[in-house]
Image 1: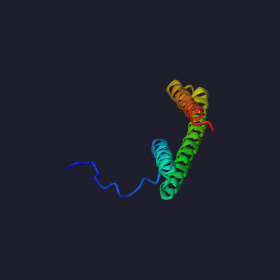
Image 2 (image 1 turned 90 degrees about the vertical axis):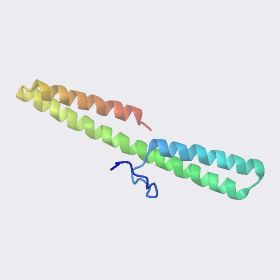
Image 3 (image 1 turned 135 degrees about the horizontal axis):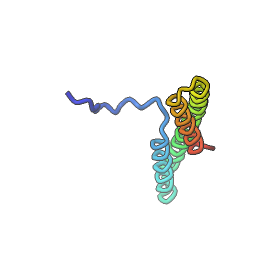
Image 4 (image 1 turned 90 degrees about the horizontal axis):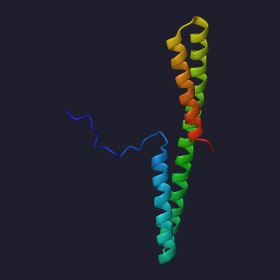
Length: 110
């Protein structure tokens, strides 16, 4: 039995930067076509899709930033506990998680 789902009718509840960017660009293209042809329904539809895409992108960016902060905090805690207890593996894993969180926050700054 295949684990691939063919039901795409249910949208993801998680915001996605890729999906948001796609809808933003698609909306801009549709709006431009509406502007060129004078089709006001296309203009409006394009504006709405662009705005929806921008909102989803920003939501995904904010979510990723917060996740980065959580990784930084958890990583710092593990690094300190590892240093205090002499557990080098925990200390190194904590430092790696902290650094991952810092990088994730840098990538998702507003």
